[in-house]
Amino acid sequence: MKVALIGASGSAGSRILAELARRGHQVLALVRRPENVLALEGVVAVRADANDIPALSNLLTGADAVVSSVKFKDTDTQGLIEAVRRARVKRYLVVGGAGSLEVAPGLREVDGPGFPSHVRPEALKGAEFLDQLRRSDLDWTFLSPSRIFFAGTRTGKFRLGNDELLFDETGRSSISFEDYAIALVDELERPRHIRARFTVGY
Image (cartoon, rainbow, N blue to C red; front, top):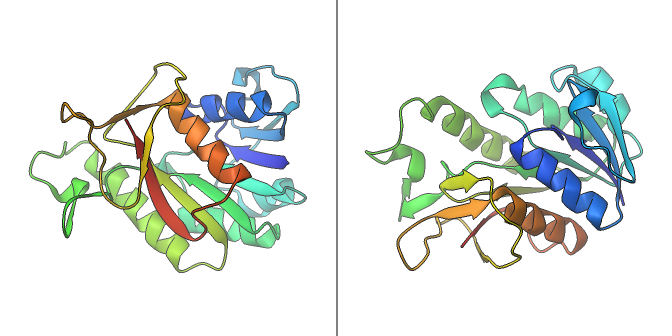
């Protein structure tokens, strides 16, 4: 596929870029600093501003799918949706957050008593983005990582869930950037969560 990846040089974005290239997709890597993008076969890096909606929509035109991996509170998330719509790309996959996942019926992770206050603004903006997607007409997917999202290894061994935070047998909720990237590209290639959120964890 021709995939436009917004935020291709970040922690999650760079792993998604590597996974897309590994599987032979053609990737337009849209970043503030193209020199920071991994030099991989099938990848073209282009300077872009995720908040410049007219310019971004022009860059997205012609893609089969768009993936975004951006900081929510630094981004006009409704504008991202509009840019994808203007480009007439229906398929949109979003690197989501864990804060909007439920830890108990009706209780989101972000609303729990132990949730770090410095992370709360980003988590709330991520939850708002999910609501915006639900109101859109795109074929969107919002993939939430587990509580601990870390640089690790590519194992290909993980579990998928829906709206509840996943925990392993030790009570830890985690997923590596590398395995998250596998789950996201799997969804791109074999869609099972159109207009839905899901999550991945060990």
